[in-house]
Amino acid sequence: MGTETSVEIGRFDVTVNVPDESFKQGDIRAWGHGPLEGSLDVFANSAVFSVDSLPPNTMVEARLLFPKSYLSQAQEINTERVDTVLAEEARWADEANAIRMKARILLSLAALLIVLELALAVYLYFRYDKEHKAEFEGEYYRELPGDYSPAEMSALMTFGRISPNDVTATVMDLVRRKKLLVEDITYTEDRFLLPDKDIESILIRKADSFDESAMKEHEKRLVSWLIDDMGDGREVILSQLEKSIKRDKSTAMLYKSGYELFVDSAKDAAQIRGFFEEGMSGARIGAILLGIAGVFGGVALIAMLTAIGLGVALIATSIGLVLYSALIKKRTRYGAEQYGMWKAFKRFLRHFSQLDKAQLPSIVMWEHYLVYAISLGVAAEVIKALKIIYPPEAFQAAGLTYLGHSYGRGMSPVSSFDTITNSISSSTTKALSAATSQLSSSGGGGGGFSGGGGGGGGGGGTGGF
Image (cartoon, rainbow, N blue to C red; front, side, top):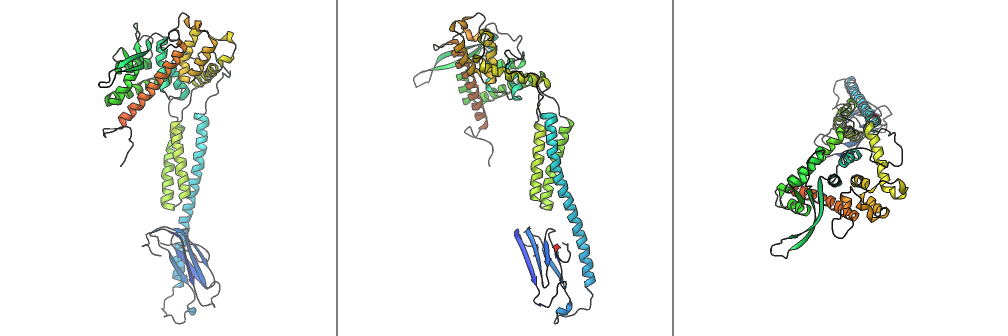
């Protein structure tokens, strides 16, 4: 087989038969030249050359020696060839065996590297990824575990995955602290040639006594983003904001960038709190470098030794190690302790209606708890229980802010709170979706879709080439 064959051959077999049955075992000596994984079987009057998965443009050559007495009609050449052939084949066999040995060593090293990478991943987990055990082991925690904002708490609980619920929680916390006011309004929309339409929406505005004292940086950014940038500096109507984002790309860009600044600021605040381990350890850096080397090693195995299975396994393991090492996040001991207490507080919020009523906090404290319930995703359960446990007159207590105010539509304050918070979260989610869709259109005349287009070797007897 010459090098001109341009296709891969799944199984290549060549049998050379000597018709003279007087041949005895050992009269024929044969060598195969080609891929080192080829095999050769020599019998009394035949030789079989085989290669599994012969690559394109790859030579396979056979060489046979047998006594000249079996060819009575052949022209004789007065040259002694046996010793020359044996010397050539011995040299080529030594070279092939050396290459095979190197290949075995490389394959063994690749397998060892896979085991090493897996062992290193296990080490990284126990040393840098496994959470510290919290000292607090109680089922419930009946008060706020920490004196920080709902957004900071959410960053602690989710490793920084701030959501629209955290926007709502921050807004309502600022309402509780009398920095903002939230109103359920109805306004008339002028629809030109169509009849005017009454629109129900949520209005967020600065309190008359608004000032930024005692406000955290992410809270200032939220007010600046929602009211100063998206509103008129004094207030913002959420339904109008959604429409503006859908119509105007610059508004969409401003909205999305403002949201991202709020998210980044909240995550920074959580980091400053000391919730998370900082920096990249030497072991993690070493694991990343080892993984990168493993990827190149896997490619080399496939290209040079056609060891596809082992090469793919090494590449997959190496990529996994790089990603795992780079993405490890771990809470500090303080962060783990706070995390455990917040989980117990969340259980308290979900089950407080089943506990001793005499030990439940006042309705004023529930106003504070509720803003955290929003970020924890259990506000609806808390509201449902509050309606059952506390009588209507409890919501007339002095010191209440949003729970002591009815927002209209004939609903009680606690029902209004549920409606308001759901509306703010829904509006934020819709606005972010509209902003993302608007920005992904990239001037193509539409909106909403994006993301791209567009040799030697030998040995007599039975064995390899």
